[in-house]
Image 1 (tube, rainbow, N blue to C red):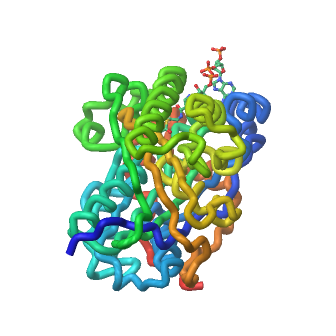
Image 2 (image 1 turned 60 degrees about the vertical axis):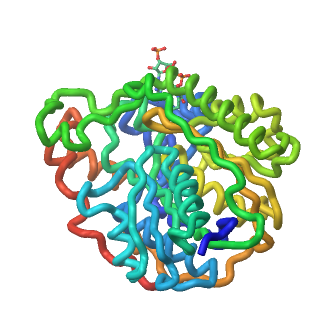
Image 3 (image 1 turned 30 degrees about the vertical axis):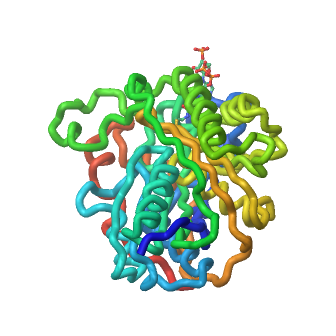
Length: 380
Ligand code: ACO
């Protein structure tokens, strides 16, 4: 049976407890709190002590409980992110088995930082066409494990985290009411992580090559342009004006990018959710974590109109428009939690650096599985 709408009925996040501050970074990189704060707005970010699948599973379990459902009710899991432990099996299947969501189809969506927006659009389309009725869409990233910790241009920008939403078939005019997705592929080489993927296994990339190809200024300009254009188009196509948007929940790569996008849309920063200072850029996890934080802070009201623009490697971009439903409080809570972490964020980073060679580029450090296998998260 087809549904007219796909409402967001559950939400949850899983943030690793270890916090890496700008001061921590300046103990081993030629950088400073002043530079990072002024250029990016970032103050802290999280470093995970568990696998991406574990973070994703906890976030998904919390979202499912929030919707008043059980894993058995879920028939689709969309795992959005670009830091998969392995290509085969996919990561969504790891979440499926850890949750016990045995009825669910499980697929990965990798469009880098926009993976959650692409995943939410895909799940919504599948629900509207009757291919699914209850989906969990996850945005998750474990970037610290493949960061080039010798490169201050990128090492200060990213952090780990996960969040998920439940999307359900609905007769009410809720959920995604507009979606614009695109890809500025001409600039795809401006953000590239060498050392991950098949080209590395085939030795097309030698050990001496740069790991992160990253042209910050090119990305900056194209990000602002892509997010602003997608936002304008999604509003126009839905027949709503910027004044009617209650809250913008943007991708958080840089506070200056967020401000430029808001300015271009004619929306004041008082209507923009900003989390970049506390989590840095968590890639695919950034938009859903910001959404969950906005709900926790009471910034999403019944019936709110939310604009969520994003961009990422590819360079993919997009903007979705969401009409929130009546409920802004969880129906239930999951007992699933991340296991405790007995190390500081700085200790975790030094462990990762020790696995990499002096140039941060060893095959063992990059290619060896970081976690022996994905464990089932703790039942608290
Ligand atoms: N600490 C101190 N100095 C630094 C650091 C650092 N961490 N990083 C760079 N610098 C230096 C540079 O070496 C340069 O020095 P120079 O003038 O002597 O050559 C100087 O600071 C200025 O560098 P710029 O690159 O011009 O700095 P800019 O103001 O453009 O800010 C930044 C850089 C923050 C990366 C910005 O360009 C940006 O945010 N870009 C887009 C965001 C982005 O790419 N996000 C991540 C990828 S997209 C996604 O979300 C997947």
